[in-house]
Each structure stands twice: as structure tokens, then as C-alpha cells.
Image (cartoon, rainbow over the protein chains, first blue to last red):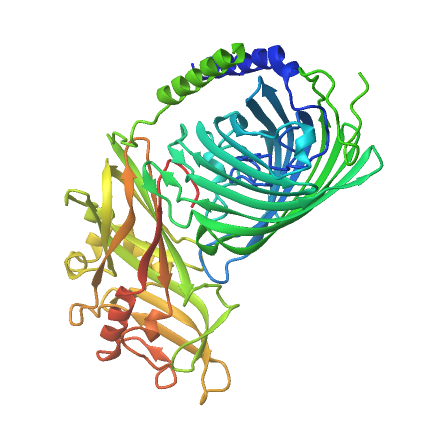
Length: 345
Length: 267
């Protein structure tokens, strides 16, 4: 039943998009200045969500591919001398952000996961398959005004939204192996609900963004419920323009994730939940409608699963094609500096 | 405006989906009978016990390398959330866990469905069982003989067989130690019981067989409430003074690490 409903929702949203993508007034600039994009990457890290906080800009409408690598280690056993095992979470995502009308936009992520871990007896475990797809809708309370004003005073952006994570990824009870990372899964197996907010301010080439999201997780059909999750991130960035076709945007930031404890049969699972605080750095290169981004996250402070799971690092690389939209306001005057030319046709 | 309607419709659908998938409060009906597995995970002061390879230094400056850790556990009973007690049948209620054989799991079968909150069990063999005579012991007598857990029928069961080598400030070469603790016939009763409370309820039903994962800290045997010096005496068997102290130490070496609910899962 759920599947039918969700298919319907997806179809509806796709249908809506088709009708409206060409009616956006935000012009055609293709740089990534705002870098606010909340990917709410609820299933990046196995299922924990590697909130690789930044992506392309708010005004961008794109479709792209992103690869996320997350390295963890977790303790195989309950003792101080129990061996650490390495866990590699790999995700390839098809992701997109598209506007619907003037003030709405929709983000969607379809991940493919390929994870591996090596136990102390040298046996390896691999899981791969579709992860949990996420659909998010945002309402833009404050949005950037036209291009001309943009460069004279700071611009504020505020978006609020919500969405759904769909259990398209398999959850297997067998993967709850011992005390090692319970998130070694393709998906949570649950229908999860997201609430998200993004705020950004840009001035000239500079930008600052703040994003926060909360994932309310439900229990899956194996009676396992992953703990609710709160993600936040703060990023700053500056865009450098090289000629008319190239731009480079380095960025640094911090971000964090807080997890409530997991539950099984309605009972709290020991040594789950926790928090991690990251430092992040990355850059995005734009060439015409293409955006290539690289970012890395390193933990500064962490306490996950009672200290039995540690994040080592996260790395992501993406290639997006920005979808230029026709303006419904005719030919806009673009500032003479710092802007890419409009797409021909 | 058109898009506004579409979005409204979309949001409506989202709400609809979320309302029909809201969970049912996590109340699981428990009926029938299930299995309860109890894992005795042996350790030494926070470290996994690795026989004959790792060493450990206690508060008395004695460094031990353990080569054997066997003990008898018995008379399991489980208490549910309402205080009802299920006592496992005494005839099949005696088990030997042995680190060297890797046999460290006790399986209780046909446990009635319920939400269990604590467990009581004995370490060793009680006088009631022993007084049933050799015939009354059934297969357990053979098992005990095979696992070095008997002196002789007259002398009785070894409740604990703890062996290895040690060094200390005054014993600089590796010296063997043997701690064999038990009741000696009916004259010295060292049978003890311990009660452990679960931090998570253990759910039992036709579909649910929990694993109760215990940590057994073998450093307690000599270095618990009572301090037993190997330098003073390295072989302790029939000792009216030391055996009862060791029995008290042993009854305190068990704790619950976690309860794993589910069915046919590893722990």
C-alpha cells in the first residue's frame, strides 16, 4: 500500500516539475554562491547519514552524481582489548534540485550503496544495493532578488521544508552483528520524516550558510528503530571568477550530528546514539553549466555508540549539470562583473 | 498559483502517508514459549580473556596468565516485569561453561513468553542436588568428569576450575597456579547464587529468543572483595579458609553487558 502511495507522490512531484521548471525568475547564473543545499543525506553513512553539508547553490537547479566515501572503525566485542574493525561506506547518489513555481523547490536523492567491512579473522562482508531515497520540499521564505541588487547589499535566503525518506534500501537483522556498528545497512527499513531549514547570507563574493535538519525515524518491520537524528552545519565560502566561464569557490565550515538511541522492540539498545562534530573543507569549480565539487570532513569531537564506533573521515566528490531556466521576466540586465554569461539558447 | 495547488496536494499526500505509517507504540504481544540464550563472555579486568596468551596484573602485583577457566552454573530462574518467577527445571538445570572448549553459552529452552527483567542463578551444585546421590546426577556427572569439574564423587564437584601461571615480586619464574573451588562433600557448602538485573527487558515468545550477554570478570576470583594471594598459596583446593572466600568472589564476577532481543540473531 505504502509503495503505491509513494509512487503516486513521486509521480505527482515529477509531473509538477515538468509543468513549472521553466517559469523561474532566478535567472540563469550558474555559480554556486549560496552553497546552502541541505542534502539531508539520511542514508549516506550506512544509515547514519553522512551530512556532507554543502552542494550547489540555492538558485541552482541541477541534476548530478555524487560519490560519498565514509570511513569508520568499530569495536568487534565488548572489551577494552576487543579488535577494531574497519568499515567502508560508499554511496553513489543521483541527486537533483528543481524548483516548482516561484517559491517551492524539491530535492531528491536516490542512493546506491556499496559497503564493506573486514573482521579481525580476515573475513570480509560486503553489502550493496539501493539505499533509502529521500524527497524534500522547500518553501523559500526569503529568496535572492534579481541579479542587479545582489551585488549592492547583503542578500538573505531562508528556506523551510520537510520531506520523506523512503525505505527503498534493505535493512537486514543479520547485519546487526555483535557490537559492531549497527548502521552497517543499506537502509533503515523505515519511513522517516524530515524537517529542514536553511539560512544563508551572501554579500558580493562572500557567503555564509547555516543549515539544520531533524529526521524523525519510525520503526521498521524488523521492530528496529534507529534513533532520531539532528544535523547542523555552518559554512563560509568565497567565489573567485576567472574570465566568463570559470569560477572557483573554496569553502570551510563546521557541522555536527546528534543521534538518539536506537530501539528494538520498543526497548532502548545499549551503546547506540551519540554525537559527532566535524570540521569541513572543500571547493567547487564551475565551468559553464558544470559544477565539480570536492569536500572532506574530519571529526573534531565524537562519541558515537558509547565510544564503540568512530568516524575516521568522509569525502565526497560530485559532478552536477546545472539546468538553466528561462526567465519569465525577459532579458535581465546582468552586472558587468562576476557573472557568467547567460546560456546561449 | 497552479503550482501552489499541486504542492498543497503533495503535502497533503505526505501527511496522509505519514499518518498511515505511524507506528503502533511498540507493544508486542508475547505468546507461547521461546529460548533464552545466556552468553558468558569471560574477561580479565575489562580485557577479553585470551587463554595462555595475554597476561594481567592484579592489585597484589601478581601477573597471571590464565590457561583454564571452567565453572558450573545452575538453577536458573527468570523474573518478569510483574514479579512472576519462572524456574528452569532442576533436572536439566546444570551447565558447565568452559573457555578452552569455547562452550560458554547456556541455552534455556521452553521458557514461557514474557518480558523478563532479572535472572538468578547458582554457581556450583547445591546440596539438594548433591544429596540425590551419584544416580541422581544423570548425565551431568559424566559431563563434569570430562571437563575436569570433579574431584571424585565423595569429594564432590569443582564449581570453579581456574588454572594458569603467575609471577610476582617474590616469584620471578612462572609458577603454576590451580584454584579448584567447590563444596566438599556435605561438610563445606560453597554453592552461591547471584541475581542480575537487566537494563533492557528480555522478550520471550514463539518468535523471540533473546540473548543475555554477561560479562564475567575473572579477575574477581582472586582480586574481588576477598584478596587471595597466589604467592602465599598457589594451589588452593580443599581449603576451609580460602574456598569460601573464593566462592564469595566468584558470585560477584557476573554482570549483564546487554540484552539482545530478536530471533536467531548473533550477539
